[in-house]
Image (cartoon, rainbow, N blue to C red; front, side):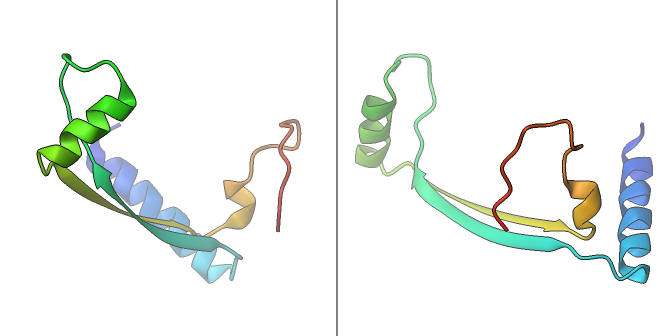
Length: 84
């Protein structure tokens, strides 16, 4: 599927959900920390300490929106505990 086709499909799904007044959810999360990339360090804690010492900071912004809660849920055959 070409990129513009997937964007168009998403736009159509959002429009239909808004027109049907579906319930949805959304959240935004900001994560920050240190990241050191390379093959020389195999231990997570050591990589974090190295990154902190080298001022290799990172910040990640994530926003998630679901305009149709029903379509976002897995099928009933999946064993999931929902906390609403």
